[in-house]
Amino acid sequence: MRKKISVLSDSSLLIEFFSEENISDFSFKLGKKLKEKFSFITDTVPTFSSVAIYFALDEDILHCKKLIEDFIDNQSNLIFNKGNDTIRVLHTIPVNYNGKDLHRVSEEKKLNIKELIDIHSNKIYSVQFLGFIPGFAYLGTLDNKISLPRKKNPDKNVLKGSVAIAENYTAIYPVTSPGGWNIIGHTKYEILNEKFSVKFKPGDKVKFVSI
Amino acid sequence: MSYLKIKKNGIASTIQDTGRFFFRELGIPVSGAFDKLSAQIANILLRNKVNTPVIEFFFSGPIIQFDVDVFVSVTGANINVYVDENLYSSGGVYFIKSGSILNLSKFRNGRVGYLAVRATFDIKLIYGSSSTYIPCKLGGLSGRYLKTSDLLTINPKKYTINKNVLNKKIFDIEYFLKLNMNVIPFVKGLDWDKFDKKITNMFLSQVMEINKESSRMGLRLKTTNMYHKVERKYSIGVDEGIIQLPKNGLPIILMADGQITGGYPIIGFVPKYGLSILSQINIGQKFKFELISLDVATKNNKKMLRGINKFKKNYNLKYANF
Image (tube, chains in turn brown, blue):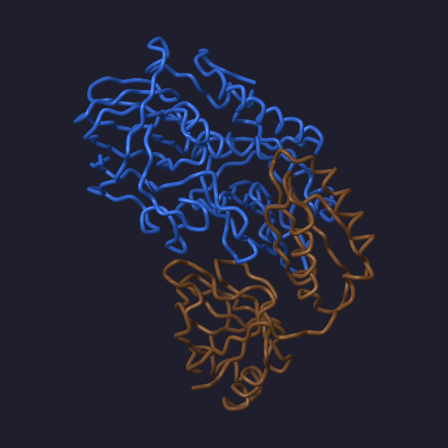
């Protein structure tokens, strides 16, 4: 797999991978490994095909870059191995498929409501990365049959617990916020508790059950 | 126990500190002070730990009554510091007598100010930080803005200061950083080379202003639209100071509450030592970007860190600097 390490800012680097496949599982593992290996790393953010690495301002960025490059080069066989996809944590999420965009999605995708719900709930998704707002997990990969773009005009107020789809992902809004995803249902499952601990960790598995 | 009584809340006043690190992979943004240098200096002036909570406010600060004798410091914007009837300049340490009222409502210029208190606050840490993140009602005082008649519990600590420097301006950002607000340094970003020469030339030469719709998440710039067709296929992790250029050609600079990931192309980034100056640019004030190398950016960051350390050791100088 071809890769490129670039300077993202004065205290972060970006490792990008050029692969046609979704490799976010792998980016997550690599991020974790790098964080364990190098104490200068404070945060890592794995996404679809990249890992961002963050460190304190007093670190020498080009030196960090060199260390990371060498590490990846020496480990490539090990970490490029996809490994077996064992399920560590499975969250079962009860969903009331009553979202305001459900009918529009079914029309656009030429599926009836039942088919749409079956396709969405038949799959076990993995938490590929978190971003956007705390606890907002990108769950993938969504079946192509129900994949569609974000809305052109985002909603100002998407309710907490909304189950939504966009592009290759499905997600649950952990708090009420603006958002542009297509809302197909709602859940009472709490992703952020009152102490703000996040239920989903990268690599966890998620299954939706229609109620 | 003693209290700060908020007589008037000011604008967008929140509790902040140096930020919330280590949890970005859970989607938790760094947050912390909008002008991290000024917030740190406010604490250093009082010999507090640098991550002690401070009160942050934009364009107009709070009016606060104290029920205990305590030292405070005010940094960030240029603010009229009223202790009862007495007027001082910001950037220094002030002594507040029990019953006195501190009024920070009048800004002379600048965008964001900080009040630190020589005391410990009774604020619960969430993910290791007291910073308020409003979009998620997380941290600070129940995750919200301060409001009139709030009481903040404090536990004052002993302090001594040379009489000659009390009530005087000791810290000024522009002087400290040797920067001026009309020129903001930036380094070429990940996608710089993907933009047409025409776009990058516009970026280098155009006059910029900060749009009213800016927030703690990001500064939206007002300038001639630099329309372009550059795209990023996937979202990537982003960072404070990153300058995104969406299709509408109006730059967005990610700030303290910036999202964890972003999909817009990245034309550049403002190095951390420049963020303090950037965060003080007022509505209507004009500036340009100046291209610098990564090397210069890193050197200046280090200079700033050294300056902070020097300041920690000896701030009794009038106008400490690099």
